[in-house]
Length: 364
Ligand SMILES: [Zn+2]
Image (cartoon, rainbow, N blue to C red):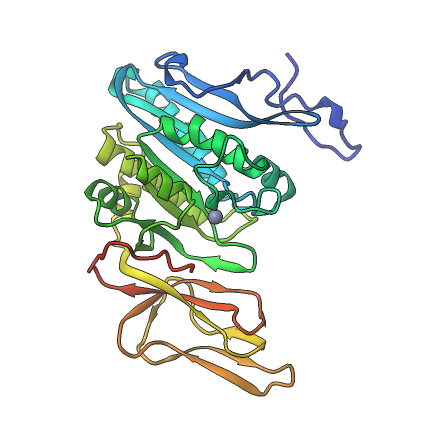
């Protein structure tokens, strides 16, 4: 049998030799009953069509022998947010190793679905958007709409609506950096427990923005949380491993899966995240060269200088202070030093657990 990978060598390799994924069949719908219990499955799910043929998303699936909830882990709804891809691969690898080594499939109640890349054209172009639009503001889409709306519609109907729980994996957008943090409705007990077991650096309570996958899922009774894993267009292995451990712990402690993390990883994950009741960005008032003096996930002292903007000649134009009436932590920051008036500079989480309803997501 020919290998499904290409081994490069100094004489070069023939790109036509690529066989990867060609033996995986394509499905039109994510009906769980089509997956044989106890079998690790891979499929292409057809979402759309281009002039040159079908547009398919990759699907991992494992259906336990007992009935139970369907849990989805979704990556790259923003095409350049790739840290979620190895997270999903590794969660499935751990589950497969556990099932093969110790447990019969009967020990899993329900189905685990992994979609490592949701936004196919954005991923192929290494960009956040889909055809210039944000897929994560178009949910639940429109069956009779423009291309991104139809794509969102198929995604929502064929994937999201088949789930009972969803972990939506993201990163910062281009030019910005994120800590490992979860956005979740902390007034929902189920979601709060999942977020806590995931044990990120920070948890930010908020409602989700209109048209987002998380918000539309929640409106349909699906338990959803957003996991922000660092930075775009790169793999950050520390954050990836921590997220894998966190999702595995949530699966074990809240959804009855066998332990998928070793004891050391479970204990490491029990470092308590900083809990924030909301978050917001500080925007620049000046244009020039931005320097941010705080690090990701670092606590902020009230009233301290957290960033400055200088002119290209080095003159101080704006000093950006931390708020002096509440405690904050750095959730994310702008890493592009070229600042315009009104640019985002630092994303602060407000430390506290007074969780109000209808809190915006800090991006508005
Ligand atoms: Zn994103």
